[in-house]
Length: 453
Image (cartoon, rainbow, N blue to C red; front, side):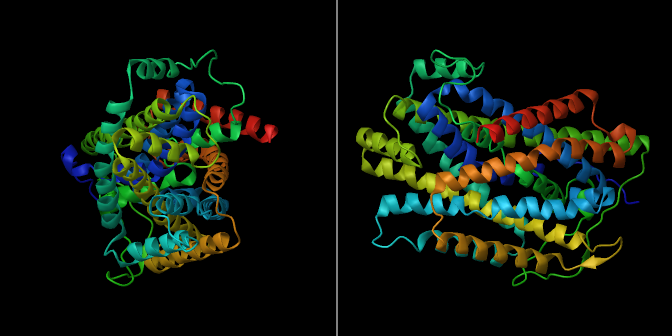
């Protein structure tokens, strides 16, 4: 057993949740919830609150395991059953192979610059993303810096636009929406697509199996027992080598239990401030902006509501501001595509390795990561070449599939932590109750959505 290091100050621990937040920016925050707000008003925003809260507690239980063992939860799942690596490889690959984010980003960029031939744009974005991830010295540092920069650069503009365009009525309607009150209806308006709502609910955070990637970022940041975990280096600029993917834990002495409790408070605050608070604030700002500028107008499908927002902003503040808003949206979508490819490639590659892994076996995690990365990019390009390019359709389909995959995670992570962690390190009863509630919610809405299709 290794010694449990002492936790740093909060400012030193901030980072992992920025990456997970970046995975959500281009989906639930930018597209799904603003789309629903533009078409049906703010009465559905209770779903965003509930969705991001459920994922907040799910992510903390994922982090709990890696803080204790210094390994990814997938290694823990493998210890439970040999079935799980196959499940996670397949259930991650299918939903996230759909290139919805690159397609949406390309469509917005083309809307601003009007290229004579824009068919190459989504493919170019996919390839460029692969190059960024390939040439960064370490994946974690590359991801944390890029996601933090994009979030910090984009939010001030969005905040400014909300201040300019929103009024007291918009914020009153938002407050009512938090308890499910819309204009003449409660919880669900007539005509709302259940698939769109379920997709937005699932994308109130990272969505699907990508929540499990938080386990990797605990290791990469070196938090608690993650300090001893192996990192993934670039096969070009780093020094990839064969490493052990299993971790080790600490003895359950009173001193270590006390130290772990300090770690636990630290990651709770880090994840609350960055993922929950900043994430929910972003959903609110973008939804209120869509509601204040577009609601009540005839809004067609796809990303038309976003273009209508840009047009209203441009008419009031000038075309450059309107175009700037759309470019920030495209940048957020690109950051999501970057995060999706990074996280899903980690998950797919490690679970493929775990299919034949035995305890103590060393593996070339970096090589397998880049094979998974460029394999996904290749499939995404194929999907685009086959003519499947409509962003809203691709994003909604991916979100529904990820909602189904995420349903499994709540009972599974509960069982893993009950099975593999000491009693004093296990989740409190009220946290277990939240996981059960989230599981039942996802089961019920997934079944209703499937029946209605």
